[in-house]
Every structure is written in C-alpha cells, then in structure tokens.
Image (tube, rainbow, N blue to C red):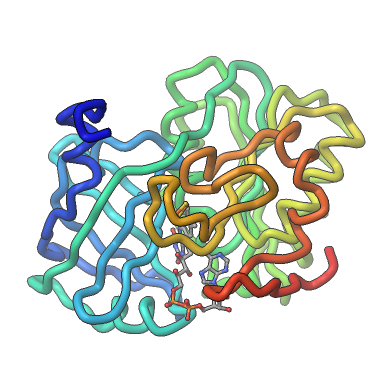
Length: 282
Ligand SMILES: Cc1cc2nc3c(=O)[nH]c(=O)nc-3n(C[C@H](O)[C@H](O)[C@H](O)COP(=O)(O)OP(=O)(O)OC[C@H]3O[C@@H](n4cnc5c(N)ncnc54)[C@H](O)[C@@H]3O)c2cc1C
Ligand code: FES
C-alpha cells in the first residue's frame, strides 16, 4: 500500500507541528487561530484539517482562511473538551496539523445562493472568495442566534462588494438583520429566482431544511456535513453516513447523495461508541 502513496499524500498525512501566530476572538464562544502551514494554506474551499491539541485530542476543523504567504486559519467554536483546551492556547503555543482532507465545494457560474449558520460560515467565506473568480451572482444568507455570534460579516461584505452579490443576515433574537432563521429568506429567494446552485454549511437541521427546499424546487445543492472523525483517511469508520465516509467521500455532499442517506441526514449522528444521537427534528 505504501508504494502506491505519492510523496505528496504521505506529506499530507504526516502530523506537522505548527506554532500559533495569532488568535482573534470572533464572538462569545468562537476564536480564530492563525498558523503557518504551506499545505493547509493551499487547501481548496471546504477542505478541513485534523488539528491535534497536545495531550488532549485531535479534531477536524475547516480551514477558514488561506494566505498566499503560507499562513492559514481555523475558526473554532468552544463546544467540549478539545475546543475548550484549544481556546486556552495562545500565540507561541504549539499545535499539530494533518491535511488538508476531503473534497471541496464545486464552483458554478450563474445564480448561486450560499446559506450558512454558526461556524459553518467559515468554509463558506473561502468559497465566496473563490466564486469571485467566476461569472456568478451570489445571495449570501448568514444566520446566527444573536448579533454577537454573527461570524465574518465584514469579511463577507468586502468579498461581495467585488461582484454582483448581496448579503442577507438573520438573527434568532432580532438583534441584527431580519428576525428569524436563515432558511426563511432562503425560501423566499428560491420562490422568486431560478438558482443554479445552493451551497450550505451549518447546523445539520438547517442544511436538511435547505435540502428539502432544494428538492422541492429542483435546485442542485452542495452541503458540508460534520461527523465524528478519527483517522480522516477512510480507515476507522467513525464518520460513516449510509454508505459514505464523510472524511473521504465528503465533507461536501450533493443533493443526490443526500437523498441516498435521507434516513440518517438531519436525523442522527453517532457517538464515539457508535450509539445513535438524535438531532432535534428538522
Ligand atoms: C469536516 C469538519 C469540519 C469542521 N469544522 C469546524 C469548524 O470550522 N469550526 C468548529 O468550531 N467546528 C468544526 N467542526 C466540528 C468540530 O470538529 C467539533 O466541534 C469538535 O470536534 C468538538 O470537539 P470537543 O472535544 O470540543 O467536543 P466533544 O466533547 O467531542 O463534543 C461536544 C458536542 O459536540 C458534538 N460533536 C462533536 N464532534 C462532532 C461532529 N464532528 N459532528 C457532530 N457533532 C459533533 C458531540 O456529540 C457533543 O454533543 C468540524 C467538523 C468536521 C467533521
Ligand atoms: S474518520 Fe476514519 S473513516 Fe472517516
């Protein structure tokens, strides 16, 4: 097997030790970490890295910025043990990275809608930056619980100002933009316009709702899924959804692939022991 692997694949999988160069608070529970890593800085939008927090755990994180100077970032919500430990890390501290892994968002020309919520917005910003090289009109719908938790709104405004695009912001408490959830204006746009692609990343119930709407209007969709990950190279099986492995076949799935796994998508994820954990009904 080793003979079949190219030098580049081996280098991708090798754990590289990096130093945190910068941290930035993005919201009450979210921080961005910047480090130097040539491989991750060359990632395509939607790809992820495995990030090792020494002595704690290794977790998958989307690459939220890629610089020409080899600097790149991850944007991390504090949800449990590993992300709590990561949030305590400071510039100068060490992390391990492997990757980038997985497929990436496929760009289209035409009329596209991007729908994101929470830290799901991270890979969507890099997608929007990439789409500016295409002949595309973008409606970017961003959702957050509160104004404080809204991510990257300035960076998105800057990107969208370069092309035919608009940003629609929703907050659940109405503290900024429209009161409600991202799927509300997304539904209205779908009712009025013919779209060539919907891109979505965020809470799985939100992506499920977008998939149902996309099916109804016959619009193609790409959604970035999250599952528990260990190896990230298709060996351990922790990230399965139906016949797919999210680390290897995803994390981006098409509307057709999601149809195949509709009994699982939006309904449950699996714990470390393989037990089903129900998601709130969509
Ligand atoms: C491809 C990919 C990209 C990701 N990108 C980002 C990102 O850019 N920013 C970010 O903040 N997070 C991202 N995540 C999620 C992140 O990996 C998890 O939040 C992290 O592993 C949680 O680790 P923890 O030890 O802090 O929490 P844990 O104690 O392990 O878990 C806390 C809670 O989150 C749930 N959970 C943990 N991991 C997952 C998962 N992979 N899927 C569904 N539920 C999970 C657990 O069931 C539990 O309820 C991504 C996940 C994947 C698979
Ligand atoms: S994380 Fe091991 S198979 Fe996907």
